[in-house]
Amino acid sequence: MSRGNRVNIVTLGCSKNTVDSQKLMRQLLAGGYRVEADSAGFADITIINTCGFIHDAKEESVDTIVRYAEAIRSEGRGKLFVMGCLVERYRNELQDELPEVDGWFGVNRPQEVISRLGLAYRPELNGERILTGPAHYAYLKVSEGCDRTCAFCAIPDIRGRYISAPLDELADEARLLADRGVKELILIAQDLTLYGTDLYGRQMLPELVRRLSDIESLGWIRLHYLYPSDFPMEILEMMQDNPKICRYIDLPIQHISDSVLRIMRREHDSTSTRKLLYDVRRMVPDAAVRTTVIAGHPGETDKEFQELLDFIGEYRFDRLGAFRYSHEENTHAALNYADTIPEKIKEKRVAKIMELQQEISAARNAALAGSVMRVIVDRREGLFLVGRSQHDSPEVDQEILITDAKNIEPGTFIDVKITGSSEFDLYAEFRQ
Image (cartoon, rainbow, N blue to C red):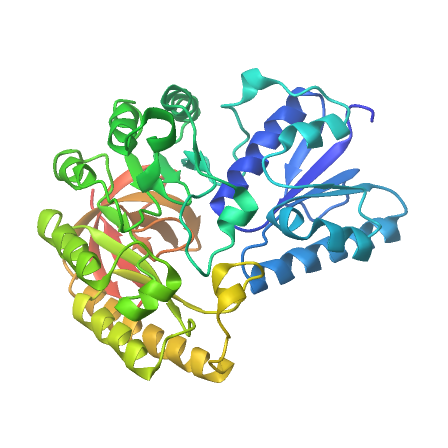
């Protein structure tokens, strides 16, 4: 293919896919292509990076492929390539149903995509990427895959075994991002707690965080997805002393009932989960604790659901997401358990959880009135600056709407005073 073609990379799914797309864009740019992200206009080549994790995400991926295929057919020109998790799971079925797609590529195969576009892969660019969102924060993917065997999860089947990125490479990548103006670095993996165990024989997350915090221009380091089992307690000690490490604990417990946790094949039980969560509150009392739970998993009776609901009311998580269980092909749960809980009951359970969490969030936010917070400014929206505190991650958590702040650029850290709140947002005024 000739150079100079316009390439549009459409990214669906999680932040790990975002990183993969951004690195692919850098390779294509180095090879002479013009690259864009999620563009609505016509492109000579469209590459869709898909998600295949849960039903809704798979449906969105298929709909997106069909939409772009129809647009290319209507235009009478253009190429369409599809990559990512959906392809890894359903390549054969997709090839049969969507013959208009010009190429299919699974996960962790950027070299194949680049070769198909007539380029040689450049390993010297491994740590480089094109940032496609706000320039002041970026995701740092520290590993691929997962070694956990959770009954409901298809990630190990899609992404393979856990593979850590070398410490030095991550530190170099972080420095490149910081040199480009990134102020907040968000560490992501399917499981941060295992980082380094495959390469170095021990948990290396604390050492990685130490190395990253030495980068002077980085203001915040945020940790996503810390598995409750094998939790590195040293991280809590570091949070106490290092203001660069966001007081933000993303700890997906999924459930609190021992019987459900066993069926889920989780490696933690109710006792260890409770102890860890209360240790977090004790050691870092100002930390925001975020979790996710699943309602309607096989084995969850009304009794187990009430146990989960009671615990959410007892612990009062700062941030919480609830998901309705559905069978995923080839997972342990799908192969071994019947999905007998009616969808209406699952939906009611999710609604009850979120109604309770809404009350908790409203009360927590109301208690912040009059307090002063350091925030990072994400954007301007009408009369407001929109920012986040260290307790809120972009795209998934609440925002702070700030008045009386002019000529302040995104990526700037400022102090604000909280003046009001709703269930999932705060209102503040700029403090000079």
